[in-house]
Image 1 (cartoon, rainbow, N blue to C red):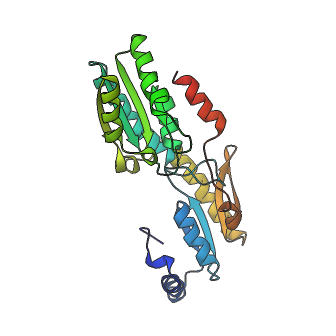
Image 2 (cartoon, rainbow, N blue to C red; image 1 turned 180 degrees about the horizontal axis):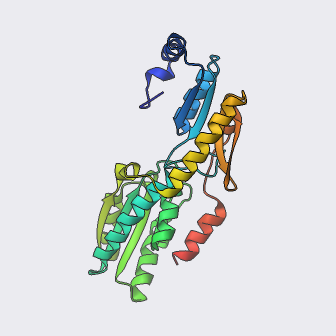
Image 3 (cartoon, rainbow, N blue to C red; image 1 turned 30 degrees about the horizontal axis):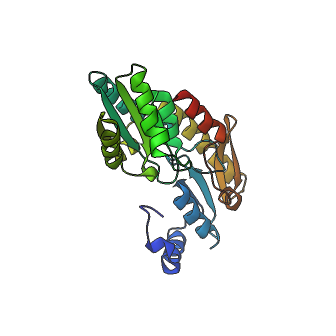
Length: 252
């Protein structure tokens, strides 16, 4: 189930995993990862291998849990980079277009964009008009006296390099692109990630000791619990409309 194994997705590969569990007397598998890992664990459970899933994905896009491990660390890494870019942009009239991770999920872009005071935030869950939502916004900001601008976009929206080129062509504002990429996946875990991972780990052990298998550990309302794995994977997650609306208000 590691490294996005294509073999594991096949019946033959899945059976190899089952055989390994039997050979090494593995009684239960605790899988830590995102949607792909969770679905792989579910496939194992359907082969009578008990599993527990701990959600860990910087996209924070697993619907059953309010929080997935790694999200806060990724946010802090991206925020520090944007703060440094703003310092550079402040000494010139320049637009910095920052591409953060999130092919199908805009959680990182939305949160970091709001926290960094970005002038424009683009997420894959919400359509945008280039002229109205980007060009007009930047021109209004320039007319209001601003001399530096930050555009934060999720990778699912497109390439930052293309966006920067279009912005410069249409506005005349010098624009530079930065793709943070896998920098967001590294670094020392934040306090929040260390704390919640500890809570989830304890809950996982408790769930196993209680004989309840094929569960996902979730974080809701400040506490950790567990839910049926199949139910946890039954729905998709997108940023709340209220959060998207708030972001639009803040970036005006």
